[in-house]
Image (cartoon, rainbow, N blue to C red; front, side, top):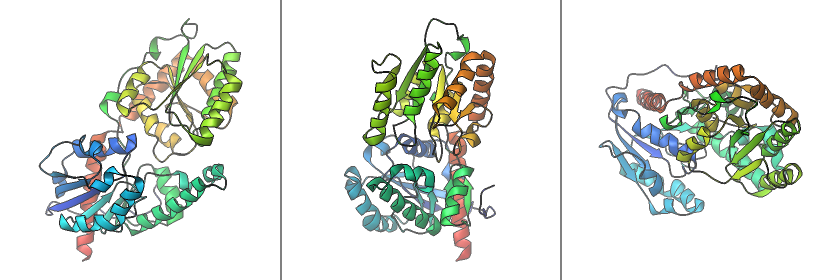
Length: 396
C-alpha cells in the first residue's frame, strides 16, 4: 500500500473547472506520450472539467487533438533554452494562469519551479531519491543537480493539493524523503496500441541458423548498465550461443565511454553488438518486431516505460530485479542482478534453452500489459483532478 492517505472521493459533477497543464518542459518520449494519451483517451467533462489549457512547445502542441474544450498556449520562451523555460515558469506563468481564469494546475513533473496553487503534481523522477544510484555520480555537477532536483521535487509535492505517482515503489521511496502526503493517487502510464504487436519469437528454436536478436532500448547512463549486458552476451557466445545484441538509444559522457571500453574488450570488431542511436518513439515497435528477447537492465526507474512496451509487444523478457520492475513485470519474466554479467547471462540462458518458458512468460507479460492503457490513465487522472478541486472548494 502507498505510504499516505488518499482522501475519499468527492462529487465533482456540479463543477465547471478550468484546468491548466504545465507541459513546458515535456521533451522525453514518455512525457510526450503521456500528454497525448491524457488529451485523446478520455472526456474531462465527465469529471466537472469545462476547459483544459495546455502550455507547451509547438512540436508537442501539434500532436494534441483539436477539441472545443482544449486550449493550446505557446509562449515564445518555451521554444528557447531550458534557462528561458524556467524564467517563464517562475515569473510569467502565474500571470497567464490568472488571465485564463484557470482554477487548478496540473504539473506534469514534480521538478517544477512554479508556485501556483491549487495544483496536482505528478512525480516522474526517481534517480535523485536512490542513494546508491546517486553515489555513481561521485562528486560532480551531475550529483549536485540531482540533490537540487530532489529538494525542488520535495517542495512541489508538499505544496500540491494532490500528488500522482506512477508506481507503488516510487510512492513509498519518495514519501520517505518528502514525508507522507495527504492526497495521493497511483496512476501508471499507458501503452499506445501500436506497441501491441506480435514478435517473431514464438517460431524460433535454439538450433536455428539465424542468430538470436537481443534488444535493449534505453539511452546509455550510469544506472542503465549496458556494459554489463555486453559482457553477459560475450559470456554466452563463448558457450556457443549465436547472439546479436542491439543497444538502442545512444549516449554521451562517462557512461558512454564505459560502454565503448567494454566493447573494445568484448567485441572490438563489432561482430555481435550493434549500436543504434536515438530512435523516435513511434519507430520502436519495428525494433520489437525484429527481436527475439528483450533486455531491461536499469537499476533505477520511476515507471519503466520501455519495459511495459516490450510486454505489450509479446516479447520474452529478462529484467533487472531492482526498483519497480518486479512490481510491473510480476511473474512475466526472468530476473537478474543488473550489475552482475553472470547473473544477466544466466537469466538470458533460461529463455534461450526453454521454448515453453519463453512462450509462457511472454504470454503472461502480454496479459499484464493490458492493465496499462491510456484510456484508464486519462480517466483516472481527470477523476482525481476533479476530486482534488472539490476537496479544495469544500475547505474554503
